[in-house]
Amino acid sequence: MPYFIILPVWLLVCLAGLIMLAFRPTRLVGALALTTSTAATILSFLLSLAGMLGLGSLATAVGYPDLSGLAAIAGYIGGMVVGGLAGAALAAVATIFVWHRSRIKRAAPPQR
Image (cartoon, rainbow, N blue to C red; front, side, top):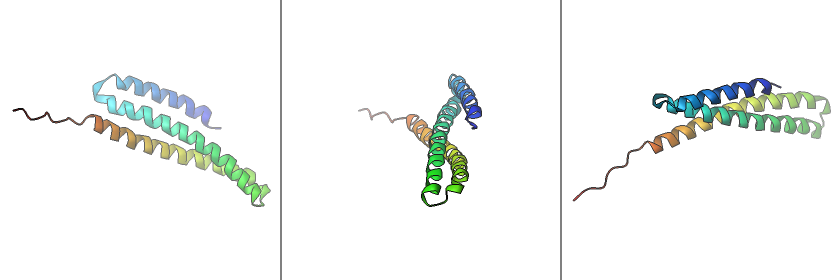
């Protein structure tokens, strides 16, 4: 299970993101580091678990019990990769969208 490597790396990225939030020039990068790493880790874990259980059970259900182990491993690895990429992409888009929406300067009302 590669999560024994992923979790310490995630903690280091979160720590670096928190440090970057303290400095104005690197705030966006810090927010991106926090959100993308967290979403990628969570979605990767969920999809790898679902892929492992789903494909392993599906192979057994359709009549190929000999391939259920291989299907479970393929579902695990595929879910981990797809979940990590999808989580990072969705979090990056959402973070940049919220970041730019919060930075819009509202025009002052006209004075008479």
